[in-house]
Image 1: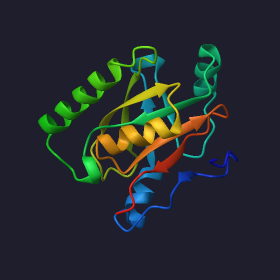
Image 2: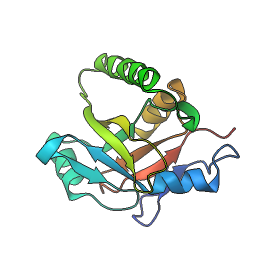
Image 3: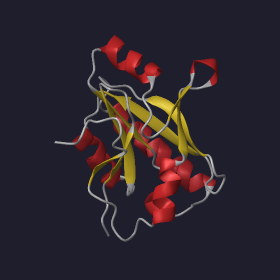
Image 4: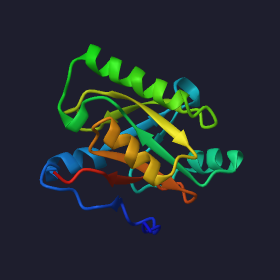
Length: 158
């Protein structure tokens, strides 16, 4: 079972050799924006989010997963390729209509990575999120439980 203490910033396995310390730091220094406009809010790894806590409580849910389909394996790809991948992720999640995702944007605070479209899936479990990330060739997801503290969950070791 994953640790639930707010001071823990990562779940699952330690990142493998493909996840450099610089890339891990980039994940930790990203703003994971949920929603758009005045209704949006930002998730940060290791920091409790009152807005996420409220969203989970209002829907009677225990968890949420944040995922992107952009830039698989952290290789920066072109806009068209990333948009196509994002639409496939949207379609994939449409099949699970009982948990409609919320659109978002991952924005690195260091400016080294381009913004990436993302989705927050309220009610998705950690294991479901990791399986979906592997399907879309992603290194990691963000995951939060009822404590509404987003944590980084690595899913690749190679």
